[in-house]
Image 1: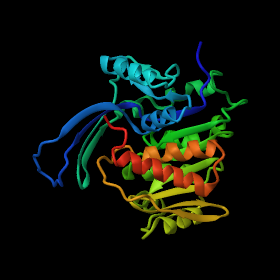
Image 2: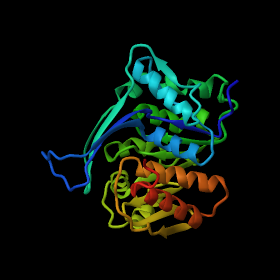
Image 3: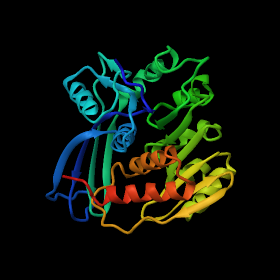
Image 4: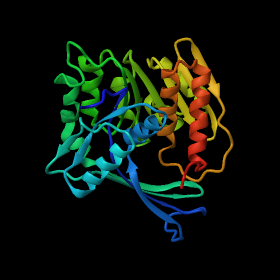
Length: 297
């Protein structure tokens, strides 16, 4: 019997292939390091962090009926993720993300995530057919949504009655996909998680600091925003004002997934009743531990 989920995670679930080197790198560098393969994708990273905090996340995504997909589903279930609602494609492969990271951060990345875009709204069927909700009785809990969905599908979600009652937490996935979130900006149930560059793209300008960006997004119509800026001051913008938080200074050993960890930790803190300042501090602390490599075997 399927366990009832605490939260839904909608978006990319794929394999991350990450090459990491402990030295500064530039284009064309050829250096020794480590290459790993692990479950990844924005929604997946969020779901894994939520599970580590004791929540029961359910996955709404697409995973191929190939050997890579079977391995990915098994890995998800071992971590406590609910995969009963995943759309399994017979003719599309399981998606893959490949990145190279150096001591100076992300050097380059390629996302081969075409399957998620190809299946479109098929991944949302459980929200409409009664398994997780319907138009007359929509899902009323938290949803973590990432910007790897198509622009058309994100626009449909913004207007859909299936999402009208949800606490919708949204991340753009990458700066290149930030503008896809414009239809969701003024949705009354949305909390938006972006970095400084993504905030500028959404507002078609540039900002010097996260607090300035949070204020700019609120002026653009956003209801709630969290803006990060690497190791510099982060901000939480809401109708009652903008607050700030400063991340701890740590040695950076990895960057892929840091923003997803921040979002998941913030969501968990608020689900547990934390006030805004406390939740922001908890999220910054979790992200700092992540990028420092704490807990890495």
